[in-house]
Length: 394
Image 1 (tube, rainbow, N blue to C red):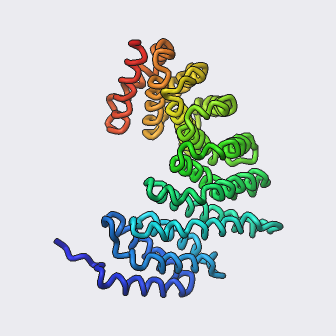
Image 2: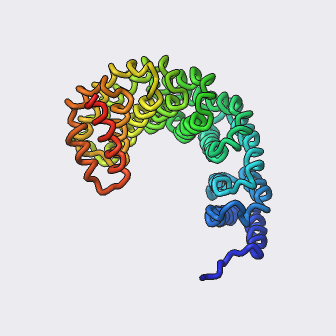
Image 3: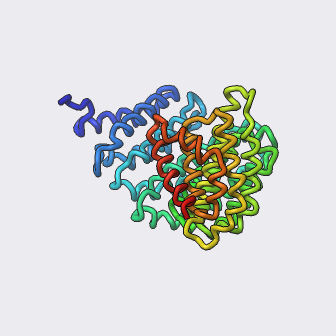
């Protein structure tokens, strides 16, 4: 067996040198952040204890100090420091969870400060938007880490009120910006949407008190002409996360969310003659729409209110059929699409039996997925086949 190059005995020296190098010129400090990033990644699966644990606090503090350097805009230094901080948190062990929890108010305060800054030049606003994106990304990693188990989720919940208010402010400030600035704000908004999804998964039905605010803002963003198209897929996905979290309580949003999904689905169904970039975006959009449908069906499963979804079934099946006929779905979309077919059959059962039987998706598309080389697609298709046969046989 090869002797590891980095051992507990030399780990301290390596970290000391890297942390010292972070105080050097921006190009050197950026390289030191990069080295630390890969060092953290190397210890990702070491078990309950990591050689980095004794230095966790010092590493985090040093990285935060780097983000505040006057010259942090040079050599991508600030971005490198946040990316490394994210990786250190992501790869950390349970021993350091209390310290990860302490990071929450620190990053929240920094995000709050960016939202307080007014009267900025366009150059300053660009930097502010970039920083908001980095801070939202950092919070996202922390939330994913703390939301992974009940033991860590519970102490994190003391912050959810403030975090939700912060993210609603990120959404609101973004939708008010003029077009050029909205373009620059893509990062922060897409990250914030992803974080809302993570919070929904972490809190489940406890997220209910904030849902009116979140849904109002998401629907408002989708209606805005200033919103860059690349933010739409994660917003649609977020609908699915919210529905999964609050179940049949999503009922009051159906009349707003479903028409939005329907018009987006229609737009994404006709791609003939589109270039590669457009096809790539269309697949992202379709996947976001499908993730929303999947979350909504799963959220209503076993609820007496499932019949509320029946009027939407013909359109959803038609959307699946059109995508199948277009023949330009990537594998991610194929897997999500066949999953939605299964979710529809599973949730609506015999109520949608005859509709399903009439659709192309339940035959040709299903068969194509069943014979796929991709085991994830095949697995989803086998489950969908079972759900369809149950829906039809009743």
